[in-house]
Length: 325
Length: 124
Image (cartoon, rainbow over the protein chains, first blue to last red):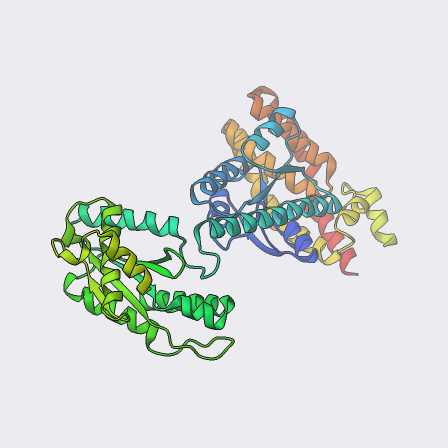
């Protein structure tokens, strides 16, 4: 494990360095508080630190405060800091601990005591690592679709709202694509749900690979995928949508029961065609364009345009389109 | 080891305690003494200058450093004298400082040659 030693006095530094190297630590030694903060604030910096109290430029408690402040701002991993001190008064110890130090050790230290205190620090860091891992996993589960690992419906809707607001603010254009896997029910009925899951996973992967790193794709419903392509050129919107459609259907999807040829119908909407509209209304329109693509024979892209009657809400037509899917 | 024990009893360094603290690492002891030989005269001079200039902040800092160095080498009496200087300077009791410095100087007089002896003992 990497450990930082910050001490302006060369003898103490050498003593600590040798002792800790012998104990199996990878030692980084610096001679003042400023350099200590630099090291500890690095993303790959040591997570364990021994800091002399009195140092030039920045003292030990000052280092603790700076590191804790940075941790709060940057959400960095916890650093376990031990102050080395020859100060023995209760007031000094309280000051040191309140600056953010986790422990203190009185100089001259005994090697066994030093090692024992560092082992305590390692235990706490290990525990912190497990907590962070658990939190990250929960965060991922709360924001991603369990089957495809792309954004879930809640997040993709938030992202859509955010990108539409931004394109209005910046007079840009956001492309909204709603894709639906053609005849997906047939895949499930013929090959079983596990194969259907494989198909959805592979489609999710192909969609992610076919968009830019700053675009978004999420699972909108069962076999429906919502894509938000921001800051786009309206002229190339239909070509982009075609590329994405082809990315899904260009080659069969390998599954447990053999390769399956699958396609996707896509509804396309350009935010600047529609002006300022509620997100729900735009989603209704792109969904209607998707229905039109289904009705046109599937495996194609249809664009939602204001004033074009194909997108008129009609209960009978809706029912017919649902049958088409 | 026999020789080292004698040195410890006769000299100012509690060598047994020091070696125990260093896990009997004689190479490390030699390193520390070498650093001490290089750094100590510079710090002592800085302390004397600070006392002459009645610079309390500087006296506090340098005597703190000296206390740490001497403690690390188990030169306990001299470390205590440095600690006394640090306390006096921190509390602003400037009048007693020259006298305490003189006591400290007596304590460290001949320390470097004694350290040379230790290095020789450790080498043998």
